[in-house]
Picture 1 (cartoon, one colour):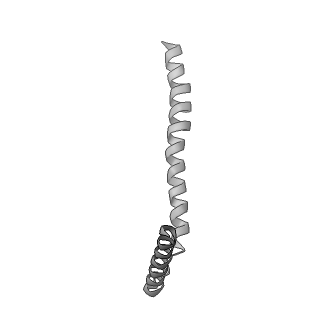
Picture 2 (tube, helix red, strand yellow; picture 1 turned 180 degrees about the horizontal axis):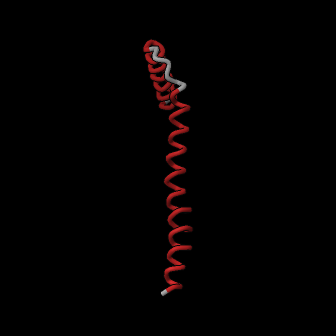
Picture 3 (tube, helix red, strand yellow; picture 1 turned 135 degrees about the vertical axis):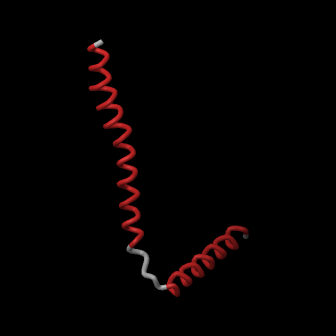
Length: 70
């Protein structure tokens, strides 16, 4: 029984659960938070700027699509 408890505690719990599963989940959460922090700096609150970027994007996308069809 003791070897099973040791393997369960030292390998399955610490190596598999804490290192692999928890590490993956915590890493994804940390990266999502950092990505959100970077995106937050793009937000100026200026609606005219947002509208200008949307219009510019639509013009560029339309130009690319028209050019690709030729």
